[in-house]
Image 1 (cartoon, rainbow, N blue to C red):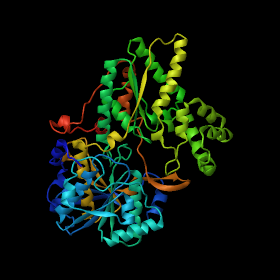
Image 2 (tube, one colour):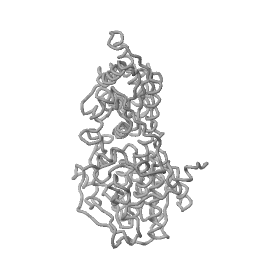
Image 3 (tube, rainbow, N blue to C red):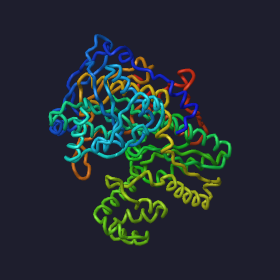
Image 4 (cartoon, rainbow, N blue to C red):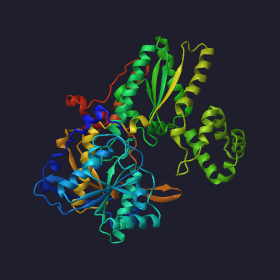
Length: 552
């Protein structure tokens, strides 16, 4: 690929490390806390992870080092969707290995977990690593969504790891990928294989976090990328003064991206899926809320605005959730029959026979274009692919209908012209911010230190992230500590619990305190493009969410 001038400049950026990891390996000391439990369902988790459950928290301190300096051979996997900074995790891991012992080596498994199962790999050397430092994307080794879950897959993973004489496998991924890492660590222990498994917290959605994982990497860069675009649209809206922009943002299960983008840009409306579910707000109530803002702004001659919508909203609206659930069950139970229906009319006729009355009425009410999207192929879990549902167009259509009625009644005298947008892939592979570059490098270096400490079944952790990087606290958290039991494909399985937006948390409270004013008045903020060079208060700032959550 051609290399831009900015990319050349970013190669020279040296990520900052927590003070405990910044010196020689001989000065890194690992300390342990008390044995840990689980989020819930402790008995079930303990039964599944007989050998790996209950491990203590690990923390790195500056002192008389107790890490092994023997040569290590480590395999690394990028799992799931891209997130800015993944290459820096690998760079931090590589540099740690070479600092610990120059004879250590790093193997990258291509295409995600499938690379480990199928023994598709590349040995990562300094030239490859240097070509990807501080850059976006996962193109160094690629990624994939394969899960290691069958006996044959686990056996193949062990065979590959044994063939390469691996000391450890590092899995860089989200909650599902790190759950997989915990199961792989348990399998290796069960088989008596001296191969550690360490995870790293990745997802732009921001839903892999807890007391010890303050944020997942990539969230900072992605939300700042989206906020720049939102700010640009706000400038355009204020200039043209004639369009309402409905912007759908990434975030299926959690609305962290939408909430942070709202805190950064001050839109007129930002819908939070968790609040919609908590208050059981209907589709009509959501439409009424937006229409109320449109009418009040029109009274001030401001026939423009910006609405932020989380990607997964449709699954949180009660009647839509019921419709989608019924549809998933119907398409699973009648897959062959439904697949044979080649026209939308035939599919609709079939659904009339099996849908509940309420769901059929809703199905007929929403725009046909959206109804067709609801019938598209399911994801690997058998669920609707919400990223393909144009929720922004659904809301626009229903709002247009409502405003037309109000205009006919004389209750609305403005004009409404709407445009829809979806910001998703634009943020997944952006050049990482200085924060993500530093954080990811620290996560990778910490993963090396966990391996050198002889640990397995841990996720790399770097805390105190609202402070300057040298004050960050590195360590590791037992993966089983973050787990509970959930239903997947009709079976109860251990999974790392997703972190949703807390409606009693400080970030949501800060948003809720201002949104009524933002709805009617124009208080837009354009944060501008991500800056890599300049004063720390411009270049090294964390998200507003992280700042608020770190306040004591």
